[in-house]
Length: 363
Ligand SMILES: [Fe+2]
Image (cartoon, rainbow, N blue to C red; front, side):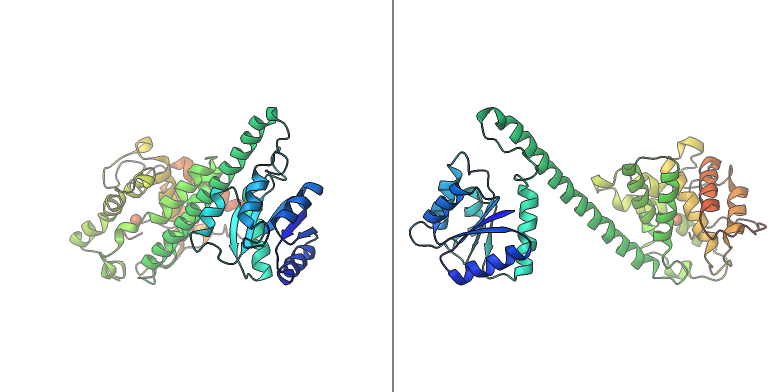
């Protein structure tokens, strides 16, 4: 990459020169905007980094000249300057076509990283077809819009990732309220994700199943820690309270439009395949597939972790339990996929003999 450094301070130019040369860049230097314009015309650089306050022709005047030149106007132009106008420097620079306004002084490592990020967004020098004639402008704009869309998608993905991480923290806090449920939601989410992938769901749906599984017990917040930890059997009244958690969770999230696909997974994760579950006694395909998947994942985690009312089963015994419940509590097709997945996974213990699977409203 060829870089034109324009700065009236020789020491600042020297710092920039070393920074860019350390990353293999070829460097051209100029001491003011007028000289910079001349150097840019002579050996078209891939990037211009310029001070703002300079004699003869300042950075903004230099930028205007560059942007009005048909050959040079596509070169990414970055200001690297102390505060110049005292106004919103970044906004002012961008309004006139600069890619960014970086404030001096910056650590060279940070400066390089920042410039890389800016060039990723601009990316015009490498990725787009820079127009040299009027007929190429349409293609240029098309390429540019693709880059912008790609960057927006990247940002959306980052936000989604952050949202999932926040949800993970939230449900981990919920699960940590009881030693018996520590890590439960995250494990259920992992199992549900594995099943969804094995069933061939597209990655968008897989992500939603993961999120739904993470949130499946969110309705337990603020209700019944004592019931979760109770060693003896629940009374009928307690059982009814526990059974309310899918509805409470779904209702609590109802207002969040972005979760509309996830809410039915929460509401129906305790429905049973044969229609004897709750809250709405749905059966077979009436139960959303994602909820049937979460139900299998939830059941598996519940029986492979020790609870106050039951000792954990090993994988082999857990598989036997899943087989026993297929067709009654659980969707047999989902169970079949999950068992195949478990059997193909490393270190699976298939020595189990099976034992009775009990309805577990506290899972
Ligand atoms: Fe539950």
